[in-house]
Length: 93
Image (cartoon, rainbow, N blue to C red; front, side, top):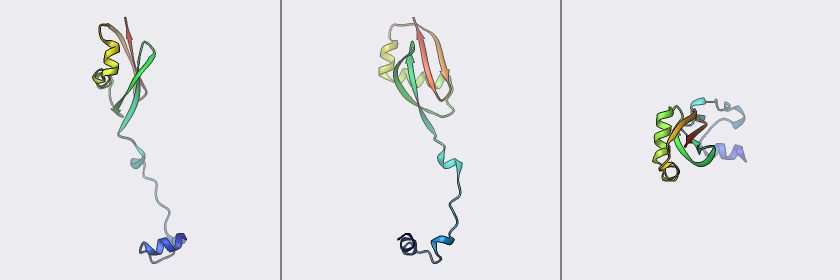
């Protein structure tokens, strides 16, 4: 059946003699990732970030999310723990 489909796609030689597709690492690399956001160790949401985002970009994206911002409202952020491409944790008082 595969040979028939291969022929109908316009190929002249047998599918058995066609080269195996080459691996291209650029095609499997994501441009954005989703990281979890915690407040005092409790999961409060997730944000989409570029893979190489630094702590300031991660904080800005998290604060722009209304679900996360509502948990931080009226509280003082003592520390921000950011593990690149993994998780963002706000430690609040």
